[in-house]
Every structure is written in structure tokens, then in C-alpha cells.
Length: 236
Figure: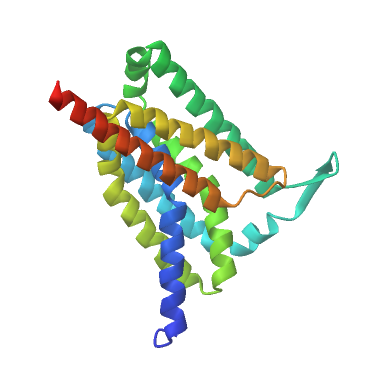
């Protein structure tokens, strides 16, 4: 198997997709971990992602159940609902509520009070990271099934993508923490992703390429704005 070029092409494709599909996960991890004291953030990210890796591998080993999770559970208003749909709707609503409350706290200036509460709950932060990773895992695993039937390749791709997240999540968190405008942008992305997850649960599929293009375009515009603001400060 390992001597075949198709195997390596499938592995590279899977790894790339897992990393791309992990963008929304990194944004959420950044938002959650930045609510904690500085000395606890790295440990929480590592523990959360390590547990997420274990859970993803377990999900891959139960692929039959995941495929069956798309089977109709009940019908409401002529819409078929499956276990996967209910999980996506619940995850989307959670992201909407979480992101909206975070934006409200920043706009209304209640950040310090919430920071004190969050500083005592690293376990809650880890729990949020793991739960959201399970929700994000469904789409990435179903995508992987469409590319290959080799469980080993899927597991290797997942392991590599999680390692990439571990490496870059800290740097991204620091960068966003130093730029308040990026914090609001990241939370806005999560609102968009939460909305997308929710409507997917109602059988309205939105191509993720549109979402990632919007994220990339907004990020480029914001980086340009940051450079302009920095240049203006130097001139002043």
C-alpha cells in the first residue's frame, strides 16, 4: 500500500483538508483560551487538543456509526433530521450564543469581570474545546470517507492536523490578543460558522469554500487596515 503513489496523494490531500477544516477550530480555541490567565493558556490548549485527537481517532474507528448517524431519525415540517443534523444544530446554536455574548462583553466593557470568572475554569475551557472539536469532526471525517477507505491514512492525517494546530494555535492566540480588532473579527467568523452549522442541520448545504474565502478576504482587509493604522501612528 505504501509503495503506491495513490496512497501518498490521498494522504497529502487528506492532511491538507484536515488542516483547512481546522481553521474554524483554531479560531474557537483562541477565543476560549484567551479568556484564561496567561500562564494557563498553553496547558489548556495542549490538553484540549490532545483529548480532541483521542476522540477523533475513536470516531474514525467507529466510522460505521458515523455513516449511520446520517440516517433519518425523525421528520418535522417535511425536513428529515438525523443524529448528525441535531449535533450540527446544537453546535451552531452554541457557537452563536458564545460568540454573541463575547462580543457583547467586549463592546459593553464587562471583560474584566468575565475574565475573573473564566480564570477559575480551565476545565470548562477544555470541555468547550473538546465538544466543539467533536462537532467539527463530523464534517471532516465524512469528507475523509469520500476520499479513501483506509483508516490508517485518516488517522495519520488527523494526527498531523492536530500537531499543526498545537504549533500554531499559541502564536495565533497571541497575535489576536495583541490586536483587539482581530478579536472582534474572529468572533464574527464564529458567528458565521455557527449560522452555517445550524442551517446545515436543516439540510441547507453551504459550500465551505465560500466561508473560507470570506474569512481570508476579511483577514487580508484587516491586516491592511492594521498596517495603515501603524503607519499613521508613526507619522504622528
